[in-house]
Length: 137
Image 1 (tube, rainbow, N blue to C red):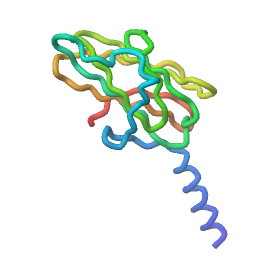
Image 2 (image 1 turned 30 degrees about the vertical axis):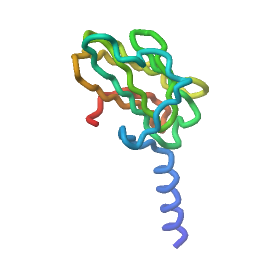
Image 3 (image 1 turned 135 degrees about the horizontal axis):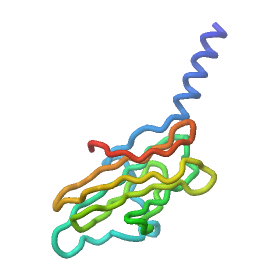
Image 4 (image 1 turned 30 degrees about the horizontal axis):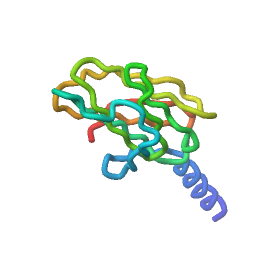
């Protein structure tokens, strides 16, 4: 009985540390005071990059700095999302952790096309490794 309770407690503890994906309808929008660039739809054709940050215990105390073409675009917290409007062409999307969290800069090249929406997911695993990857929302 004690072994079963200990095993159950361990499973609950480990699963409580993992982050989970947040969809665009679940995510809270980033506060406007933490959105810095690419917030207005440009004149003419444009595409949209939406970044979704996972929710969960791991890394929750650390903001992530979002850059586009190495320009500060936003600071995003646990369970939030932000959208950025860019003219067609190649863009470099970057995410880096702020504060005590490790992880380091992660970047992805996005070939922005007119009228397209590109979703990316930012997550931190239990070893504090940052990941930035395309997602299918």
